[in-house]
Length: 346
Ligand SMILES: Nc1ncnc2c1ncn2[C@@H]1O[C@H](COP(=O)(O)OP(=O)(O)O)[C@@H](O)[C@H]1O
Ligand SMILES: [Mg+2]
Image (cartoon, rainbow, N blue to C red; front, side, top):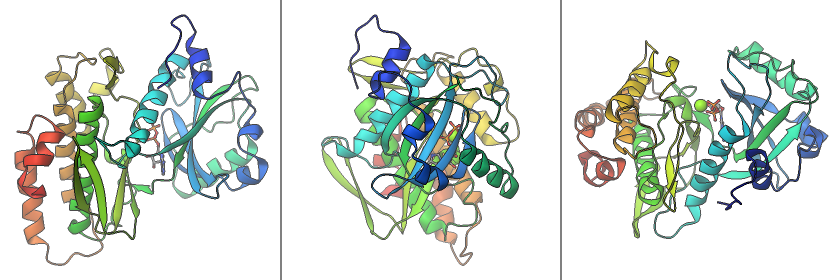
């Protein structure tokens, strides 16, 4: 993480992180040829996500987030530079975990680079937005109302595959589901040890899965190398809007103590998890409570048990194993303890 002079503004800190002295234009950041290749792949309240090809011919995901404007977007106030800094810092730290020696994981999405741009929404992106809306239906406002003074942050991530919510029915079997659960637990454990990390919003839209050929996935926990059978899938965790971590004793967190709406959701176990986290941390969101990661693992086990799979054959033993995982997981204080001690991963 960059260390800042204390008296520079949040705007200056964001530009520093982007290695810019001021905003670029959309076309400086996404050249026309690549702009044409953009296809919308996802959305959230705060932004739109497009895939395209980068300089090195790799498929990437661009998360485009309006910032600092006074206009509401998708019924919410736009994020400020200060709020966006939180997501930038956490994305960088987790992305870097794949290069460490003591606590290492490639289970968090890689951040390639980031830029701040100014201008109205490009036509090519609106076209891609419309296509997504026709094919899948969008819950967001069509982003055509921004003027040429509007600022956006563009985070370029590696392309991580499809999120579990959109993959329902595409995982081959519970064998893959178990690998997903193992990979998520290991990534959380490594980040707990390295950064006192809590994700705090690990619903199935924030877990990406892609097919891979390699059979084993390696991670290092407190200096010891471990290995997970991939079963043909690789997992990437994304979306750190609510996450919490510590760097050199400094806490980066998001104070959601007054966010009434977040704790009122009904209809899915996901919404119960926000209330459980709040109950366990007494609505204090700066302190470290790794059990929140365990709550999300409990949620994930439930989702995986109820998902549809391509191969519906005999899977009774695994189904029982996942069910026992679900019944014992909440008793562990952290993802680290769950990883080391629960029966499913031994
Ligand atoms: N790196 C990525 N690779 C592939 N898809 C992604 C990537 N990042 C985000 N997405 C897709 O975009 C959606 C929204 O992104 P997310 O970061 O979760 O935004 P929000 O904070 O608005 O929820 C995700 O659920 C996923 O479908
Ligand atoms: Mg999300």
